[in-house]
Amino acid sequence: KAGQRIGMRYIGKLTTGKVFDKNVSGKPFNFLLGRGEVIKGWDIGVAGMKVGGERKLTIPPALAYGKRGAPPDIPKNATLVFDIKLVTMK
Image (cartoon, rainbow, N blue to C red):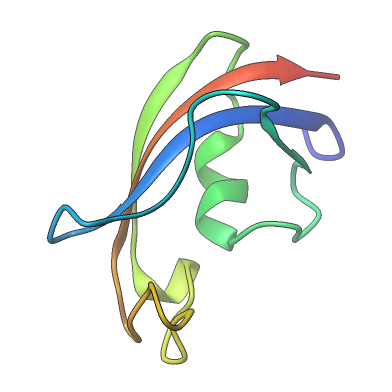
């Protein structure tokens, strides 16, 4: 639900397969769901998940970093692919 603090594990890749970011060990990546703390594709894609759930999110540029990208790792107009696992929810 919107407003819940979510803890995630993830691997983020470009459609070429190049990994640009990951969180697979240590402290999970935390954010408040539905509050704009992450790219829109994550707020949409994580909604409805349960602890232990896993998904593959393919996020178009309009729901990610769009025309500006996130230099140097994410080019402009990039579609992003995330393998995610929800590990905590408060």
